[in-house]
Amino acid sequence: MAVHLQINPNTVRKAYSELEILGILNTQQGTGTFVGNRQVEIDKAEKAQMLKQICDELVARGNQYGFTLKEIVSHLNRRLKDGSQD
Image 1 (cartoon, helix red, strand yellow):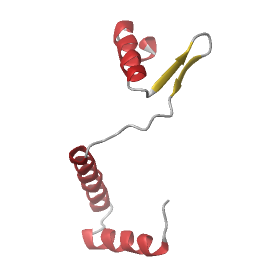
Image 2 (cartoon, helix red, strand yellow):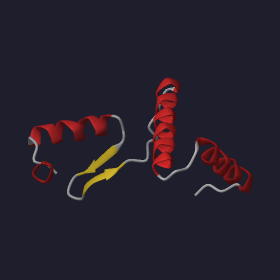
Image 3 (tube, helix red, strand yellow):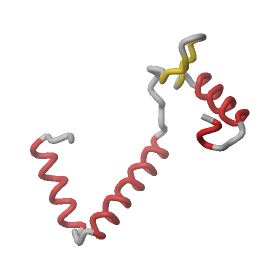
């Protein structure tokens, strides 16, 4: 990973170690490192900030293609009615 990213191997080692402590990664001697099954908990303030960023990006991207906010919201409402999750 360090070679691929061209960063110090100690940086990668520390990041992996911290992710293991949090339960996000699981290292098994001799077989490798795998993504753990622990769900990352995000507090309300951070979730709200993430949602704002996602919405800002959606609106900006839609505007690049000529969609208005009203058109975007209308499409999202249709998806909600249809129960579409994709």
